[in-house]
Figure 1 (tube, rainbow, N blue to C red):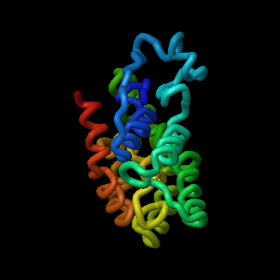
Figure 2 (figure 1 turned 30 degrees about the horizontal axis):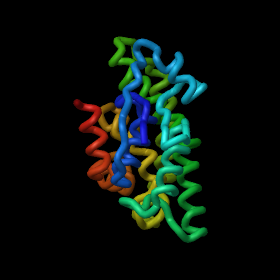
Figure 3 (figure 1 turned 180 degrees about the vertical axis):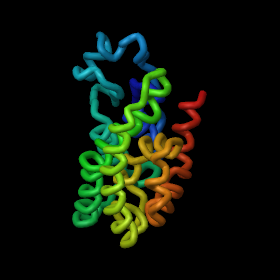
Figure 4 (figure 1 turned 30 degrees about the vertical axis):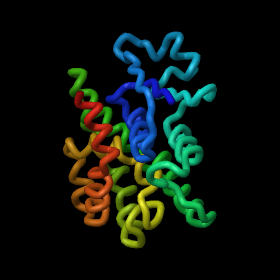
Length: 211
């Protein structure tokens, strides 16, 4: 298995975390985003949209991080941590919260990560109005998460799954910013964040990022 990506990319981190959770061997091939390698061949033959990551398993080529993570957990179900449920109703509930991450949590969280983490990194000015708007949006999502986490230990059910894992990169980024207060002020969400951020597989992703 090969992962073509960038260690600072939240989407790439999603795939790496899944591979570590499944205890699978893989080769990481860095893509130089600064030089625009992701917008040129040969990378475009792997992802025509020119975004990291891209993934290869034998002759199979995939892009879109959430699709890649689902392929990994279903194909290598007998390896490492399960990350999915076998029973149809439980799987459906987990799928609901995976969709919530992609369509409710991620849009606001990603905008905040861009403004509060990456803009300062690139020496660009933070847009306070965008931050304020998206903190309000994210707060509403986290209110719903707080209610959900009062019912089950994890978003998808009683065990850690892809529904939780997909949140890890953006939560980690925001914990180093003013938006940390959104998580800290909600006890169930705060405990959930502390739990999932401490997972050994996620710590391995951070170790790659910090090398």
